[in-house]
Length: 116
Image (cartoon, rainbow, N blue to C red):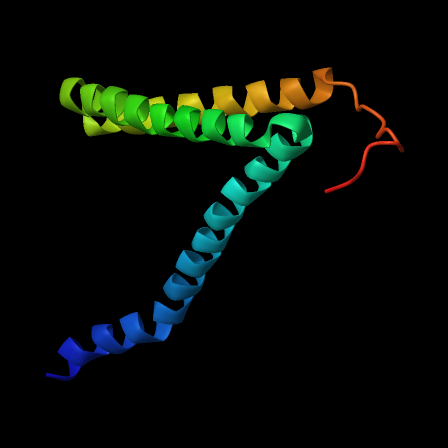
């Protein structure tokens, strides 16, 4: 009987770490859309409604395409293949983001433009 409860206590003892990680993950993913929205408003201050609508459309299209291609991948390759594909896509995405950040020159802010 004592051995059966020992594993349960260990799970409860480390449960706060799991809750903390889920909270951190939720805060990070909750902040990303807000940051993207702010960048869109700064990029198109005169057409904020159109830019916001375009952002929402592209975001929903990305979700739909991700579900479509993800379903195809899961149906056609093994679980190990899915993990390898995820690793390769993560590396490629990181390289694209780093290249985009390095290749884009910083634009100085125009003092005449009001800040939002």
